[in-house]
Amino acid sequence: MTTKKKMILSAMLLVLGIVCRLLPHMWNFAPIAAIAIFSGIYLGRNYALTLPAVTMFLGDLFLGFYSWPLMATVYGSYLVIGLLGIFVSKHKSLETVLASSLLSSVFFFVATNWAVWQFSPWYAKSMAGLINCYTLALPFLRGTLLSDLFYISILCGAYELVSVLVNKYKVAFVAVKNI
Image (cartoon, rainbow, N blue to C red; front, side, top):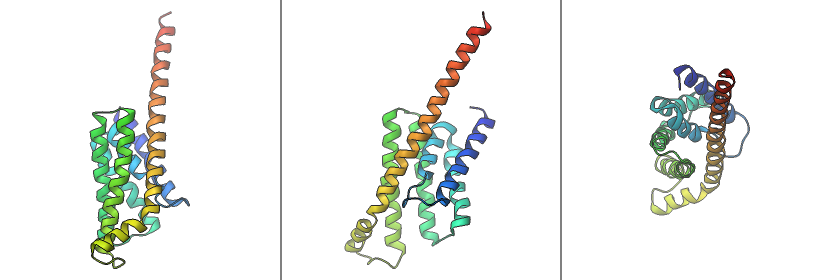
């Protein structure tokens, strides 16, 4: 893919990510992890590592910033998820894409809720407090799982469909041109 096409696709993903974060939505139903995975699969390392962070930062300009340890964990989680997308690019199949989406959801849940437990005053710093934190966060996991599966299916499905259609169009165009 050319750099120009990557930049156009990145701009579209950036707008999608920001708009979806700003519009009313179910808890944790946002496309950021899917953007990270998709970028790793189709756009490459630099996009997978920067696009989610830029999308989050620009959205946070409107939504507001919060505790830096929690923000660092959220942003760092998306970096790890972008790396997962890079790994999937070398082993791309429907199964690996869907598995990476599920894995990213669980990873994000575990990492960010550990940070909430560790860095906020809301929970006792004990095993019971950690279990309470994860238990109370389960509604957020549902939104994360649903959104990651939804958005990765839409992004990768649309990209693959367009690729197939473009290739068919090229073949048809060449066939007509040779007549």
